[in-house]
Image 1: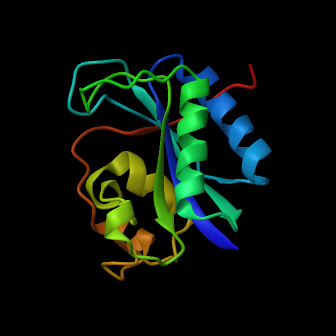
Image 2: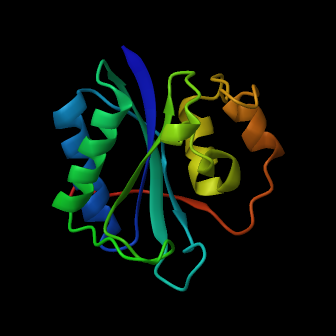
Image 3: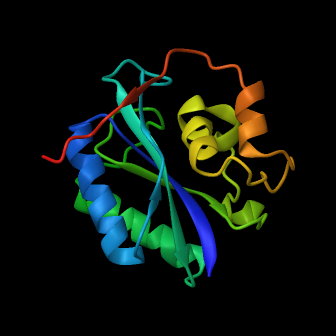
Length: 160
């Protein structure tokens, strides 16, 4: 089994979409390890605030199958894919890491871990002692040295 970390974000009906994503991920992969949820401003465009978290799954499936499952979950929640990288979305699921594997052709580990507080902070919360497979520092050390660009606050998603 391999531990994979997945970032989850939404700024369109975010509470409902995050609850749905968590339920679908658990149904598909089994028990999840979930970080706290964080509210952050939209990055790179004007839009509603995002709710973000990171979840861990344990799987025997290859990363390509997991990525396809993530895309299917996004689609099930009404994700519209367009030319704009930075835009509002119902759901964004990104495969961040795959154990300690380094696979640039698959985008593993994902660059956003080192670029965005809304990815690194929740990852440091749930996997503080794990090491980034490229830079070799723990996620807790990386977060401690990180300089966030804007505000970030803990949030909750109701049981709705």
